[in-house]
Image 1: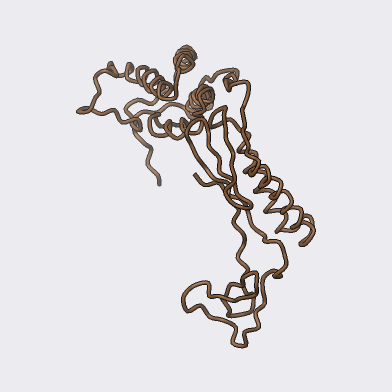
Image 2: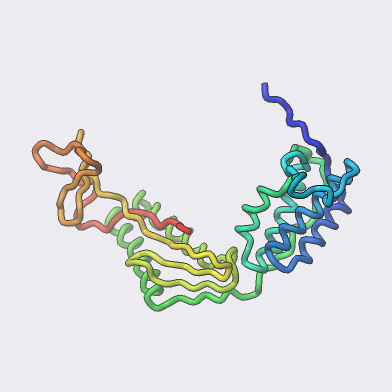
Length: 262
């Protein structure tokens, strides 16, 4: 049977405390200031329960965030406020990762007070998206590739469905403002893009085609577009008669998916 975790402090924040924490977060003018505001306000409140101060902690007496806990709904509300504020500076995603390391633990308490309204949308009003003409050609080519998969394998086929869903998902990421309000998109291959964001993050949206494997029993060869067979790994077994059965025809558009890489 699992044992209950013992915290130095485990309690719900009051509505007034939540309001004060939100005010400090919304006064921050950069992503680092947001993290600092969260740590300072949350742990000042929790340490006060013990008669301690945040100033009592330092390099020789470290604060361990996991030794404290607040209700899970309040943790989420504070995190949402911080991420909403960070969106103003293009730091929503990085803030989300940092909060995991600096916030207290959580426990279940559905009755704990939470803000009545979600945090305001603080993103800049406009997203300036600069797309090179070569990148525009890639975007058009990717859409055509999805159409070709539909024509060859059938609309709604697994090949068409998986490719189209991944392309839509990754292209939508380019338009989102999680990494700032200015984005530059350039070509990185016939069906791939390179994206530079205002936050400094550079990432790629790359097309990975599904290898054309031989489907004959006992064969582990890959079949190139020209019909050449090659081993998937060293000493991979092959068809004894060399009559391979490609998973999809040589003249078919490559099935595959687009993925995000940073």
